[in-house]
Length: 282
Length: 251
Image (cartoon, rainbow over all chains, first blue to last red; front, side, top):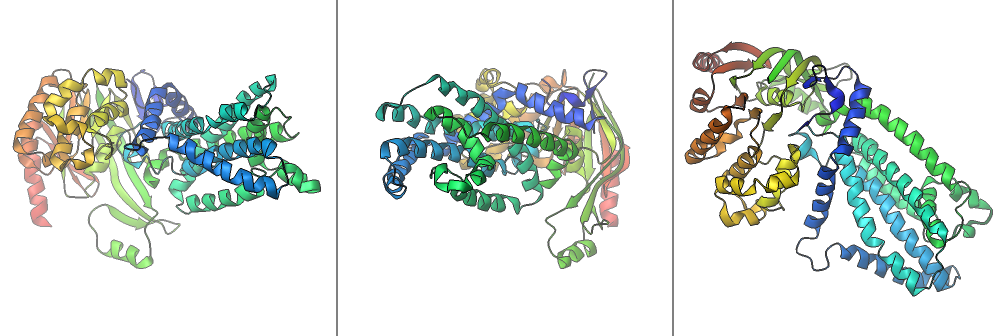
């Protein structure tokens, strides 16, 4: 069973040379080998969640419950503040909150992808990408638990279901791809500079308030473009709007596609250059 | 054919969490073995291995001897592919299993059984395949009902048994072990040796770093002596143990 990344393998086929002749090829091999060992990161992610909730009655459904409580409490108050009908505001708010929790956890958890895996990285040479995939998959599972609210909401508020709902799939896929590069890039930078995780935490807190998550974008009036240019809003919009059956903001798709391309390219360059240094940083 | 070859290998790494000047000075003034130096950016750099050439081939049972900090663990990490040489290069053929610490990948909250599966995963063994080995592993560990308890309740000796048994469930081609093995008691060590002998037939290379000279003499057929990150001697185990004792006497 190959343990090292196949990009580092040269003729004869079973000989591994370190450092690899071609760092970019080795980095690509790392990402690819990580994907092919999906059973490893998926089992690790599932176990992370099992261990976190071991001995608790509701288990991961605590997440669902706490989201429901938060949405119910905020929904009543904020619908009044924004002068909106609870029936139309609650679905918007609920989706906003659970999608934001997903997106922000990709960032905050992404900072820890390599730091938290120190015990593994220092002991066995598995592809580095595995640690990032594990973080993303773990948060996807948590998101799935929260997402149970969505069908409940549809029934409760008798929301119309349109074909548009399938647009949520490309939206979710793009957010997940962004999650992967974020977990690799922030994971590396955080391993090297330990001030990064708290800085990211602060930025996330600010983003929660300046992004139309709990408040409607229309409330900005002619400052609307500020929110439309916000990639965090784009990430939420491409998942939320299809579910609500409303059109996405005009810039949301181009923005999220742009971040995916630019972020992935930047991360690949970093990963190629510094991948083998990670073990010395943590 | 398995082999591990090192060509002019250096391992140097900057210490980022070095802290204050005075700490650096203290380190520079005092120190143990790995040589600390400041690089151009005033980062403290440890040279853990310098100019190492080493060929380990089929059938070798290599002992790595040296002081604390002479570079034994770094050497094992380079052989395992965890540290990449900062200069020079390594070539490896064969599947390497490295047992560097007893706590290796152990999750303190998970049970012994879950940890066996996880240990397998890190070696590239699918959980399903590991499930089929679990009874045999459980028997070797003699942990009984403890296997269903979280690993945090284990003594260090129990952890050693668990790690060793799980890691060797699939016969390794190349086995690298650091000195933690010595944390096991005598009865464990003799059991472990029997287990290793069983697959010495197909396991082709063993590399063992330890302070326990009797253990090295019994298990190994070749030795290298490390000092300040350099190989200062190679030969049979007895010779190198003597050379090591001289080195200790001199310092």
